[in-house]
Length: 349
Ligand code: 3PG
Ligand code: MG
Image (cartoon, rainbow, N blue to C red):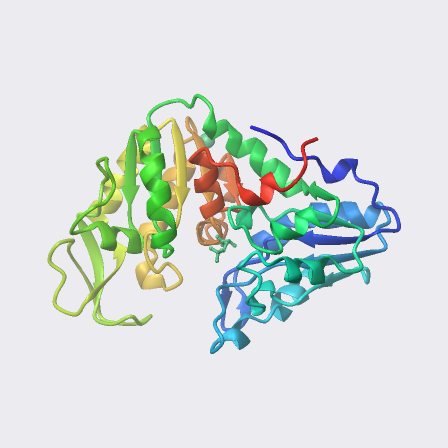
């Protein structure tokens, strides 16, 4: 794997540095529900401050705002948490990059606005490195660009999954961003011995799977009468949900089966929750997968994605896996063997 040059080798004293972090954290009721990604961005910011950068401008996207609901995605709660963790007047958090529609178009004029007044650019947003957006790609061509410490560490650990891995290699996939992940799974499935699928993704694959290899889908689900935290719920076979009911978690039989496959594995990559784990009644499946992955000491275990990290950290299991990646989709695309646009745009060391 080609390695981008490191912020460690940049001369930052008295410079204005634009940092792209991935501060896209889960929010609940307008508050940061899990600050793992914010804490993971600290080492790079602290390095810049210690090395006397004059100003550090941190930018990130937050969620997928639309014109109607953008108020929900203002950066302030995230900026406030960062200020608590790193109180330094030289560090500023810019507003959500996706409030500007040019961001996701990788638009050079927006990149120029971000770069304006800055001397160099550090990309530390591993979780967004699979996006060719103005703040992750275009801007890297306008300023001397370097990789942040988190980005480097992610490439280092995930790189291990790209080489010869010990088998069985079990891939567990769930979460909500189904359309993003199907294509990636298509290419990745061949490298894994077993692919376990839960969450919304399983729903989509139930009737017909476009994947060219066998996957294990749930055999039972926790069905709910409505998409509500305290909806009436019951366990049903996967293929006989009552009319109008929704499968909001994998059921107990599926949890047992998935846990058995995970226990046999020698390499595991898990990305995405098995259900609506934010609600206690539908958290059991995600919890079972997290416990099974954490319990397998013989395997090289990697967990990726903001929601999976949140589940692990709420359960106190982050330290029980070999690598907790801040990237979900980015980690999947890297494992597919692709060079990520956000990494490709940084010159080599
Ligand atoms: C993520 O959470 O996967 C990254 O922050 C990227 O977010 P996106 O899928 O909305 O581009
Ligand atoms: Mg282990």
